[in-house]
Length: 250
Image (cartoon, rainbow, N blue to C red):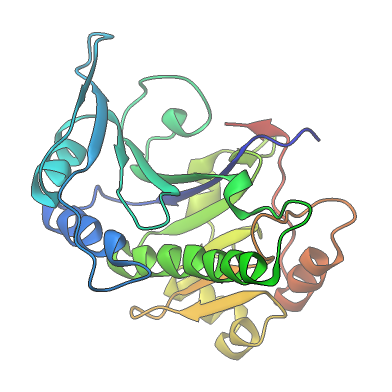
């Protein structure tokens, strides 16, 4: 397959998160990796429902959270020390692609692949910085899952995708959804798979969440699951679930 330039993750919900939850998320994310950091500018692009995009820079997490809760098609850029991350949200059939067709509210995280890739001739310090950056990336996603408590979270390198005969709604309704490169398993899924089995999965990153769910990253970003990716099959076999199908792209 041809790789896109993005890693995309979707957190899918039964009900739209509250404004208070959005504020908590936006207050927290800029603090990674340094909890002394504060952000006062969130870059917002949204549609007013009449094919008119407006770009503005709110001055606080509270203002950005209000945009998330009132506009069905918007994108929030979160200022962070690493300058890698942006958050996108959508709650209606606006726009095009896989996720806007779902009836469930969702929050989409996206970041560029090249932010995690090594280049020829990098020194030891640069490689160490990349290692830290990859770790911080999944820690951010796990922290977001703690705050948001999604019904299901799934993501991969190359664009969000499901099988041609599958829908996001159907997959989110399953107690044991398929395995993607990035996963949020709700508590019922963890119990169905077996908590100790999930905790001991041979994945690159496994983090238990406060609500009893688990965030699991199969491979170190930006590596992906594919036909020759043995670690992905090992994790899937360990958990007793199939790898996610990626025939239909967002």
